[in-house]
Amino acid sequence: SAKSRRAEDLSWDEWGERAREFIILANEVFTPDLIVIGGGISKFWDEFASHVTFDDVKTTKAALANNAGIVGAAALAFSD
Image (tube, rainbow, N blue to C red; front, side):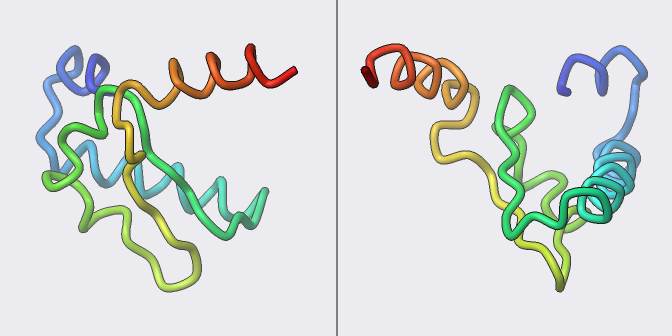
């Protein structure tokens, strides 16, 4: 998260490498076709996108950035 990056005083390269390690593990366990990165950190996509780009799994930032979770929860609440 953006908060943990600031708390640990990580550069974008350091944070990007950590995110890369996590995505590699998630890909091994779940083998997704797409990983969407949302939340506050997604506002800084251009800072770390090069670290989370792979040949075998597509990664992208959430179109709604930090609002993705809120909009998704609201859509689910009103889906019935």
